[in-house]
Amino acid sequence: MNHMFDKKIYLQRRDKLRRKLGDGLVLLPGNREAPMNYPDNAYHFRQDSDFSYFFGIDRPELAGLIDCGGDGDMIFGDEPGIDDVIWTGPQPAVKEQALKCGVRKTFPFASLRGYVARAAAKGGKVHFAPPYRGETKILLEELTGIGASELRDRASLELIRAIVSLREIKESCEIAELDRAALTGYKMHTAAMRLCRPGVYEREIAGALEGIALSEGGLLSFPVICSQHGETLHNHYHGDKLKAGRLLLVDAGCETDTLYASDNTRTLPVSGKFTGRQKDVYNIVLKALADTSALVRPGVTYKEVHFKAAGILTEGLKELGLMKGRVQDAVENGAHALFMPHGLGHMMGMDVHDMEGLGQLHVGYDEAVRPLGQFGAASLRLGKELKAGFVLTNEPGCYFIPALIAKWRKKRINRDFINFDKVEEYLGFGGIRIEDNLLVTKTGSRILGKAIPRTAEEIESRMAE
Ligand code: GLY
Ligand code: MN
Ligand code: MN
Image (cartoon, rainbow, N blue to C red; front, side, top):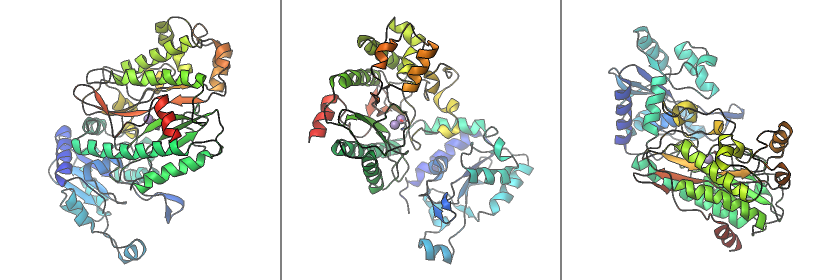
């Protein structure tokens, strides 16, 4: 049986949800097995994060119901038969697992349909979150009569808001898990520093990192990014051989068996020493990370922090001759986005981009801070005011993306702020990103787990060991 928190935690979470919603039925389908290439050959099972948050049981083919009106909490799932025992081994009864999260009522899965139909016939609201897997869409279509393609739009906004307001503030038991995930993240990144040298293939390092995540008892929190083409933001190709003089961008994280994530990036010089030009750009990104991490505290918006990073990047690139003009004007016009076309960071928790499936607008923004349309800032996943208990990533970067540089040059985009001739000297440079995971405390923030070597000197000396 998987590790779970004390049942009090799940009882409290469901009580809070009930109080926030007032009435109706909350339907929380767990995940089913997801076949890889034929029905009986499934990917490693990954539970739905909302289901896990409220019920904690890491087992496929379950659904939870929270009846805000009176019937209490229920779990629907089938007890294993002899075939299940023969093929997958003895398993605890659903009833027994349900007790671990404080649920006394369990029913066969097939009775879910009748229960939901009776509640709906009485005029009760059935709340469900936007589904992201085909199997869940089929189940919800059967249960609610809403067509699969409409389900995401017709999900309960009240439920989405209630879940976000609970999950965004991490409880102390969750922070302990996030710290644990971060320690595995530390092992993964220091292993990459040990393994990175000319002649090694990217995939050898990527495979070793995935192995560390698995050996600690969980999965990766997202597919490893381990590439000399760091300028491709989510590059999942690992087939190249490392060459002296190049940079290797490693963005990797794990999740614990309780599903809490880590997500760090380090950029390494393949030869073990940064060149002068690489170090210049590296130190700008590092300054953006360090100075903005110092700003993180309750009451500031992450949008402000994002633009502070944009200013530091612009300032630094001006000193290198890559940008020109007034820093403030360049940032207002989004010129820095040629080099950093992504947001500064995102919420993190049971999902690496926490709760992104519920809709970014509801997770990263609020009435006061609305999403931005400008290229680059439009990819900012977290803009709203920070609160103590948030866990987020800070991940500034600087990339030289040939297609984007060519496009801007051709279309004369932001030509008042970019020295295109100079920028073109950097084609082939790759990209640099440095990413830390922060817990917002009452007075500031702290890095989760153990600080991974971060300055150019720390990385060089770790690689030399
Ligand atoms: N690992 C993906 C990201 O940093 O957002
Ligand atoms: Mn990352
Ligand atoms: Mn990230």
